[in-house]
Structures are given as C-alpha cells and as structure tokens.
Amino acid sequence: MASGRGERVCFLLKVRQDRLAEYKVRHQAVWPDMQDALRDSGWHNYSLFLREDGLLVGYLETDDFEAAQERMARTDVNARWQAEMAPFFEDLDGRPDEGMRPLPEVFHLD
Image (cartoon, rainbow, N blue to C red):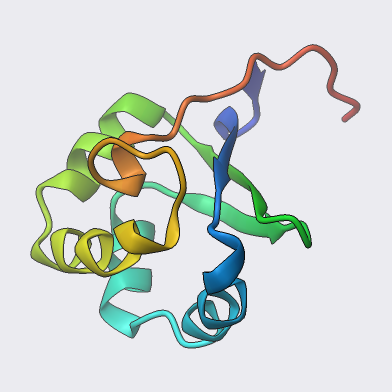
C-alpha cells in the first residue's frame, strides 16, 4: 500500500437516502478549521465520492493512517463535525470517523 506519500486509504460509508441533498450541501462548505485540522493531522489528497444510492467512497493519502486518525480524534473541531455528521449515515455505531474501515488495495498504477 506504500506510495511516495506513505499510505493510500479508501473506505466506504452509507449516507441515508433522505439526507443526500443536505450531505452534499454541507460538504460544499466544510468548516475552514476542520479543513485545517485535517491537513495538520496528515490527511492529504482527501476526497469523498457519493453515489446516488448513498454509497460514499472516501480516499486519502497519509504517512500513517492510524496516527492521522488519532491526531484528528484529539481535535475539538473533529468532535463537533462528527457529532453533526453522524445522523447522515446508515448502519453506523458511533462517529463516522470511527466507522471508516479501509479497503485492502489490490492494484495501483503509478
């Protein structure tokens, strides 16, 4: 899974059908302090892709995903953001950032 940047991470979550439009709007205006916290915690090239049925695909690059998650978990802004985002997701026990389960990478083309 190594790249020049460290780890490439992909994960899936499921956004509730009745909250898709609002989820998109909320992500057009992610709080600047949340964006800063992600960058400062080592999240790079972070993207979210949303399918019409609510399947959310996340992708990011980082030197160490577990460490980057731990750094984010220690920020106040992340706690506030996760609390606001939790109701948007299906089949989620706890916070969305705790529900991320990275998929194994099976191919990469540089």
